[in-house]
Length: 176
Image (cartoon, rainbow, N blue to C red; front, side):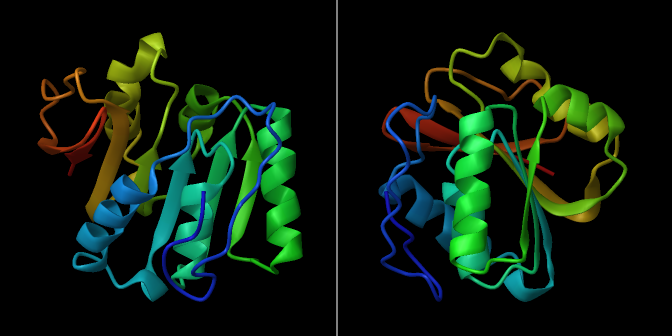
């Protein structure tokens, strides 16, 4: 796992083996950031990274100049690992939170330009993530929600669904 763009480009992340994560592949991540680079001015957006795991996506955003990144994961090991990276690389843009994502969404009042969610692929509530975010009005008017999920799973039954992009066994569903 490595950072593929920005000031930390090439940095290899070596999280502890015991973390319960499935990192986004470099191929899928590169495709995603190519899409996002054409949609957003990274130096002016707020990002919410849900189910942040190792912080791979948060680190990628920080590397590319995003000034405000909220990273949420309930696993203590993941939370601590990301806190260590934030300190080690002086990434003050990243604010890690140890919390259950669904409880966090219930109480969050901030609005974001971009929300990225990479839940465990076997999470039974994956279908309600978009509803929770739109019901609580957590996206700014031109904002995007992107959910990473297994390609065989369809999330197109939500009214804010735009499209699905497939990268092997993983897909990104876009909502607006």
